[in-house]
Image (cartoon, rainbow, N blue to C red; front, side):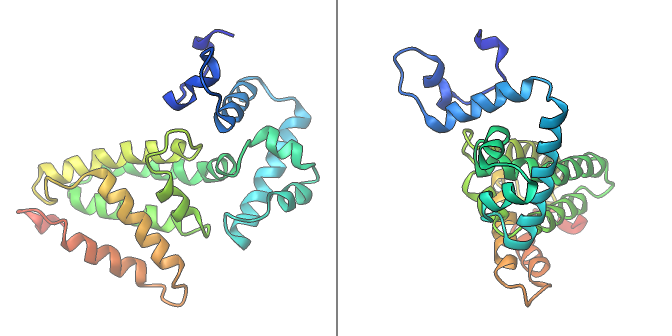
Length: 227
């Protein structure tokens, strides 16, 4: 197959296609899954995919993102091999589960990009990320640990979020509401850290909001009235 027929991939996966280079098992599985996903699914394969996704959502909500993949496959009525054909590793499954929330966050960022008070729009969006990251125990930690790992399937979540947030941050900085030396990577790490702290303190439902407000105090620029 020609390289141009494959989806975009990280440079870390080059060894799989370049003769003589060292092969990476994770990248091999990712590329194999990408090739498979490019082909239309048969009706039975689509049913299996949907059942696995539904059971994964339930299992992640009940047990966190480290829920047993074998149990997810069993509850979906398929073998573990079928699960791995659709989702070559845990992060691929997590990425698929998070797509609905990701779409919602991207849509909301576009709406807030036209907010009259850019800083308020940025704060609302960061709060929404914290809320979504807290829906599944372990998701915030996974997003944080893979924030710069282009070989992880979760990059399909991290990259669009960074790009969407960068637009909101730039508007808030242009108005002087947020310090110019703050980066979107800073904010993504902070929001994931807040979500992780809130996850570990379930008896304090207001913790995430308090931590976000405290964080914002350190981000304020010279014209921070808009926040």
